[in-house]
Length: 566
Image (cartoon, rainbow, N blue to C red):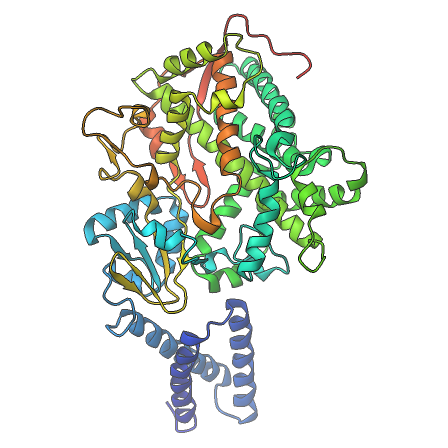
């Protein structure tokens, strides 16, 4: 270190300390920071050249390296120190230093399993990042997700790339905006028996659901007959059905998503899942998401966005000629309190969210329901078939939604599938002034989430056999004397201000599709199916990826004829 560079290096170290001090209180977007430091490096290089300091490039890189090293050391040191506001909360030591550990875990799809193991090791309050806590108590649900505290979504829900568009799913600019946008969506999913207005209810979606479900049964037959093994992948068929129906539900006659007929040669399905997976994992470090957003993504990952945006534009252009009451109708009719329309960019983003949410989770849950009932030794498939035959002797006649809602075993199977198949991670931000959860004070600004999976397999909430698929636990009498079934510990659709607006319709949709399939087909798994390996291959993030196909053999039941006018 020469006399000419010593002051520079001291300044670099000191500026690293002040950088940490500033960023700790005032977070800066990752892409802005990257640009700023690039400019600083170039400016430093130019200064060393003008000052005729020897080896200007080496000096510049060394100076910026010292700055970065001191800033990083201060950041990590503070996060690991006893002076950090979350220092008293236990958890993996190194996870305190960076949220990258949580992001990597999220990408693996095993987050819920690892967090459950960590809660068993460290207790109900677990520090899983520099500013993140996971809480494993049922009572914390009210504080974290309840309307009284109204904790906002954390920064992992920020619109990717800070796009100039707003959507219901992403972090809102204000509570008023979120409430207004939710009100618009809620109109479309009002119960068919008690609509707010006669023209507003889910009944408008029923004809499309029925038609697409009949088309699904035809798809089963076609794919099985085309297969050399006379089998078909039930999961793939259900995913294609759900995308087709979601497209029609959102865009009406402007939908051209026809995966049941054409397949998915462009990778729309996995592209959407992979994009969601990256949002969930990289989003745990918002600064990294800011930078990663500028890296060109693969075509498959943005294909769903492009398809939905194009369909939304067609839907806007043909609004006057549209007769179906689709979801877009509500967006196009909506006006803000000041009389403003929803911007097209917002509707395009909402369309992507609607397609992905309406298709992904529904298809996955139905698939898992069939996996559980077909692989279970309890003969649930035959029991469910009998329950449905008794309720609908015609097998192909209309399915009354009110009757479906009252069938004990059908609804028990769905509830048990949701319990084991939806280990979601829903972080919220503690508001100003902090919050007390189960007698523990949580500082303001902390990202806190409930350990949903741990709660849903806890013997304190579901007993006995909390890890097993036992639909009877949801029936009267449960699993016998001493059994426990705590429905309040089921977090599949969240709760409070951010509860899923389509929760009721999603249940109706799953009841209808499962019933229609079971009434029409005798299903069995292919020979040699490994139920344990299939379950091991289930990856959960903000989406669910089933690594193994669910090949089944379907046999049309006697007297089942698909209506020609479906």
